[in-house]
Structures are given as C-alpha cells and as structure tokens.
Image (cartoon, rainbow, N blue to C red; front, side):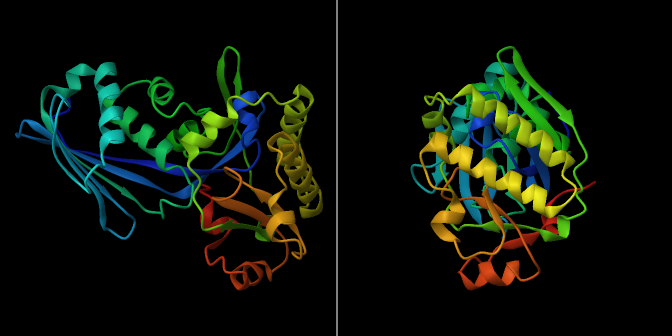
Length: 304
C-alpha cells in the first residue's frame, strides 16, 4: 500500500494503420505522442477518496468524493457525473483490494485537449495500472474492452506494431522516423467520437480475412516506405479497404476532395484526428477549411 505521493504520466497515441481492423487481428502501427495524462496520488488521513480531473487549461471538469470503500458518492460536480470513474475504481479495487485500506486524493490532468482522440481512456488505464501495480489488460478488458494497442503505447511511450490474435496480444517496438516526415500533418476534425460505443458496434462486424491480411501487409509496408508517394498510396488503399468494411466513404471523398495529397482517418471514422501527406501549404489548406488544430510530425510524435 502506497504511503508516499506518486506522480505518474502516460503518453497519448495515434494509430497510423489498422483502425477498427486491429480488433479483428490485423496488425496496426501505433505512435506515441508528446502529450499525455498526468496523475498525482496523495495519501490522506480522511476516510475517503477524492478524485479531481483537470483539463489541459487547468479547469476542473470532475470533482468526485467517495467513501474509501467506493460504496457511496459523498459529493460530485457536475451532478450525475463520476459514475464511470467510480466503476473503474471498483475494478481496480477488485484487482488490488489492499490499496484501498486508506484514503487518497487523486488529481488527473491532460496536457492535450481531451476531444482530440489521443487516448484519454488508455492513458487513464495506464496510470491506474501503474499506481495499483495491476495487469493493465485485465483492467482494460473489464472496462473499455479495446484491442490494447493504445495501452501498450501509453505505457511504453514507443512506436510499435500491435496485433491481437486468438491467443492474446503481441507487439513489437519499431523505429518510425520516415525521411518524408516533414510532409506528414495531423489534423483534428473537431468532432470527438465515442470510442467505447464505436468499438462495441464494430465488434459485431465480420470483415473478410483477405482485407484483414491486406491491412497487416499495408502496416508492414508503411514501415518500409522510403518516399511520400509510396506511403500515400498505402494510405489511400487502407482507406478504401476500411471504407468497404464500414460501408462508408473515405474522409477525403467526403470532406477534402480538392486536397492535392493523401488523407487518412486515424480514429473512429467521422471525427478525431486525420493524417494528411502533402506539401508545405497543407496546414493553410486545412485551416482555411476551418480546421485550426494542425500538427507537423515532429510537433506531435514522441521520438524519445
């Protein structure tokens, strides 16, 4: 049981390839971002657990006080919030009951906008598993039930290729620092998607194995791409295949048909981040379209 204050940090992520299909066994390329989620855990003498969540601007978006056995909410702001955190903490307690023999004050803070889709849930699972010294995948499976690529990326802070198979999860740390990275841009589409609901819905989809295998090959080819032209071709093929499975038009067809470059969705199609590969005027193009959050590769991706 921790008696000293802990300062924890877990990276956010972007999934370059494999979105959705990573849940069905396809390999996906995941990159850590420089932003992440901080969590400070302070033991207190009070017989309760205080949970305070802060946005990246320092404002408070959740203030929850529970009895230390987690059975009762003492107070919560805003009203009717906090139940998800309470349920997650209950599972943490099941996995490490000794930890909850005392009170705590826990403060979490994003250093990115939580709407960007960079891994709010994964960085939370990562930080909680570090604090409680529990298996992060068990916690994930009992809460958000995602593939797990984001948790591994969050915990490690390293680029990796991830695959979920019938016998479990495997991943390999890789180097991804392409010579054309100055032509890669990440743009937020201003509409965060509800990850848990999207994942749950996609779990019922049965994509053709041929597409799953091809997405795996695209992931491997992306690691070997030597120029922006080849990488762009892979992006576009990935979009077409994923679009077939989802029965949706790729994002470039829907929103950016006049863009002179390649565009690929990175999250739950319809929001979150996209990846664009193009010339120096790319940031201007998207900002003129009303998308003000545009990152260059080195501005966003953690290379340490």
